[in-house]
Image 1 (cartoon, helix red, strand yellow):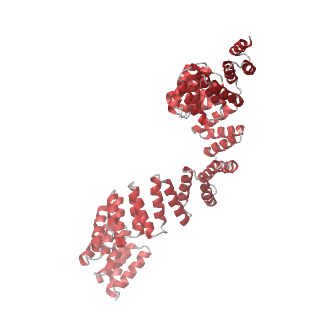
Image 2 (cartoon, rainbow, N blue to C red; image 1 turned 60 degrees about the vertical axis):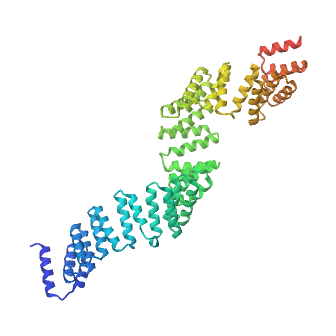
Image 3 (cartoon, one colour; image 1 turned 45 degrees about the horizontal axis):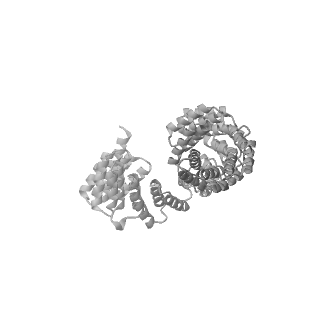
Length: 542
């Protein structure tokens, strides 16, 4: 005979010979449960229930003991018997619901919670349980409606916070904020309400409001690291770099090795033009994480700003060895190499950036720059054209191509490209001046030419070349006194041989030949091989 059966015989014999009542049996069952002897506890509860079939707590204790050993059906059956005797006992229904949850029969659990709610419509815990079950079974809208059914007099801050959470999960963020605010108004220390309001605004992209509520939440509880980190991200997104520093320092006091926070602090200091302090943070971050290519990238950028190109190059190459697909590393390596006239490395860097998915418009433009500096003008022309096929409105590429065409004496092509630039960017002073000057050279559309050049000068009032262009338009218009005034000022600012030649031409028109001769001589001194100048000088000396 097994031990359990012997035990049961002894218990039965004991019951018939002992004067113990249901309370003593119930107490012994509780003691058995405390020692995790659930089978024995069940026997005691059963015997107690036989002595007192109307003892409500016995039904619940017996059911829970069954639940402990995963005998959910037995526990539910006990409670259903209890309901037949005491149908108004709400705990029977809620405990049956718990049993069905144990069986993962959530619809049945919902059914019994609803029955419990009909008995006591003011029990908030029942509403919360129903809401959780509806959400868990994929009915979030029902979960919301259940909580809305709670009488207003019973709704507390936690109910509104839960409503806010559910609406937020459903992407109804405006509604979520409304509920979180109600929760906050009921309990101004409710941190979940504050974070919920901030999160709603954050998701809606209303960053100022998100920051306000996150800051308030952090002032209530400074231990929420994830909240502090998100606040740092928002500060950086909104260029509030000074605010990053105290929050980052607070986090680093708790976790000195937190690389993300240290990098954010370094970036904020970099943007605040505190390069030495930023450099220290990035160096520490890189030391703590040997794979940290981001920190090495910013170390390189700071070295570039300091003019320490060799050190910058070393950092970039080190970072590239860690993360060769980090496009900006190749970009900056190429830019440094241009500055140090290492054009071969620059071309290699930009080529790698192209192969690794870099912006083709930008990279072809930079390849064009390298080729132009290397005096391979045909190659540069081709790269600028390739850049513009990718990005037809790339002003840098358009400007570079136009200037290259002008250098190659392809004036008409340069003229047309500069006109394209003006259509895209009517404030591009270089293009405005070039088109205006070209019209003056052609002696065409002089009023329009003057309008363009005046716009250029409104942007850069002391540019000698622009002033020369305006003087040359006046010359073409026959307004020689204005032309003379403009060109004399242009020469003072920029004594370029072309500007001096223009000044000489005005003096010739004014029949001030000695002044013209002096202007041409100064121009020839700067451009001694200019045959056109020599011819002009010869013509006034005869």
